[in-house]
Length: 188
Image (cartoon, rainbow, N blue to C red; front, side, top):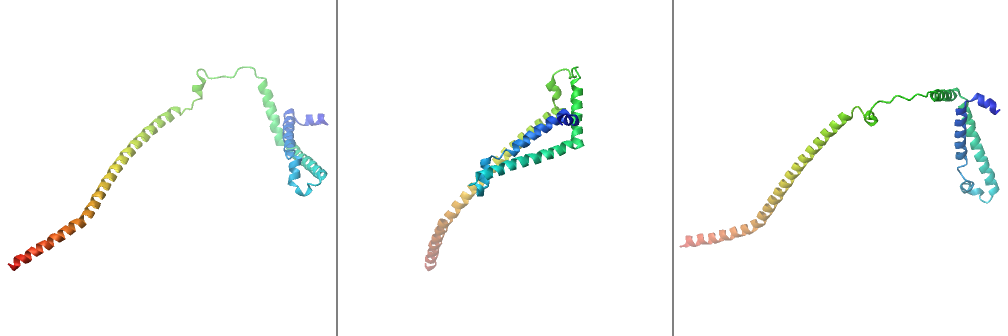
């Protein structure tokens, strides 16, 4: 049966199937029996039943995933794709001449064709950012100057308003004094 399966599938399909099947086995066995028992707290007192259920779950999961894998492998498109890959790799292994490489420095050849444009644009952006930072610094200085002027003006107004009550009292006293002088002058 293995010979008929080898004739039915190329070698790379068998290797692919074995690798995937091994992964499925690891997935199916990823839950340990202790974890399975912890999940089924009802059956903690019956470890033999938990063991049987765990074994059944692992085998069923593995068999189901393997049957799905076999269905996928038996489909024509995957088999045809793997056969094309095998033909390409066989054809590639027969070529013995060296591949052509561009002369000169390989790292220069791998550079982007737009590298020069990118460098120029980054320099322009750097210049624009520096200009904007200078403008911001000038604006910040102007704002600081105007703030200090506003604070000084506010202090002057506050002082003037606090003095106005004293000045008002002084003017009122002078007015009263001048009123008395006028009365004295009128009586004479």
